[in-house]
Amino acid sequence: MTQIIYAQSLMNEWFFLQKEENTSMGVSQQNKLNTHGFMKEYSTYIFDLDGTLLDSLQDLYVSCNAALKMHGMPERTIGEVRKFVGNGVKKLMERAIPNGLDNPDFEVTYADFRQHYLVHNLDNTKPYPGILELLANLHAHGKKLAVVSNKFYDATQDLCRHFFSDYVTVAIGERENIKKKPAPDTVLEALRQLDDDGRDAVYVGDSDVDIATARNSNMPCISVLWGFRDKEFLLEHGATTFVSSPKELML
Image (cartoon, rainbow, N blue to C red; front, side, top):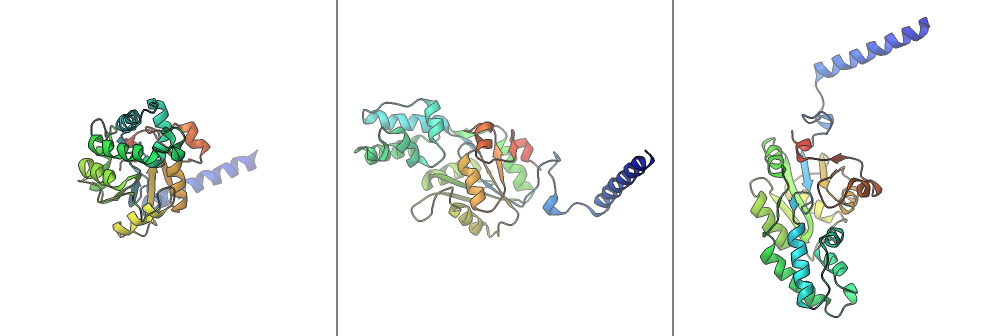
């Protein structure tokens, strides 16, 4: 019994000394936590767009069905469209159009979707609650911010310019000469434009594609729970770190 008490005393003393050392020396930037005490602070934040920064589902749903209706194809429910998004709008339409790429009207239907969406992508789309405050907070703390998306390049640029121009300096969308997510190419291009080596960067997204993108980019991933996928789905696809509100990422 005496030995147990002595061992516990030594352990308590060790924890006390560790606490004193951390207080006197401070915490290194690598291990610095935000004001909530549980989320590591990074120097660079790479964000997904749809389902992470922007609630864009309604406009994607409307444009998808507008294109389908133009060509006499059955329309999709918003629940179906929610499941279809995440791999770029071409994959969205491939999943929405009967027989996908094998449908002889695929290309013209996809083109009509793009045309409709470019005109209507601001009808209902808006930042999720707390997103503008989060970006303002990170920007005020000198963090580098970028957006990478599988949405086509022009729409990505337009949306980021419209909503986030005060905070986001780099926005990379899908284009011919760069592989889309989950390949790391868009992330690497964002880092190049930020003049950042990625050693203290984090990827923030809402989907399995984002988890794979972060892994392929050799960076940690924070999965948000306000987007297009639920926690159970994300866990099944390897998610390890979650936030349920943008406030949890604020410094």
